[in-house]
Image (cartoon, rainbow, N blue to C red):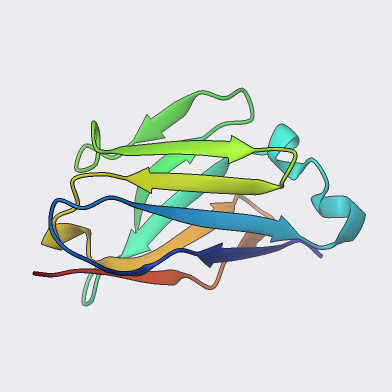
Length: 117
């Protein structure tokens, strides 16, 4: 069974940068999984619905929510079975729990980001 684990959250100040990681594990089925499937990052702020932040398709093409375009990038390292969400120029509006997801396969448990001065 493939499992996803996010890391890299924490406390940041407005304007700072932070990178979240999403590592896939679970034996042979997880090997090369990012070559076969796209991966998405979602976030859920307190009192709000979960929203799509960014995704990278198996082809490598990317898509971003309007609220993070130009500030966030998404990438993957297939040799490490890890995907990344690089976040720049953070604002308090980015405060949320961030989840990675492979459609139909797995969700991570989430990592919390708090942006506060």
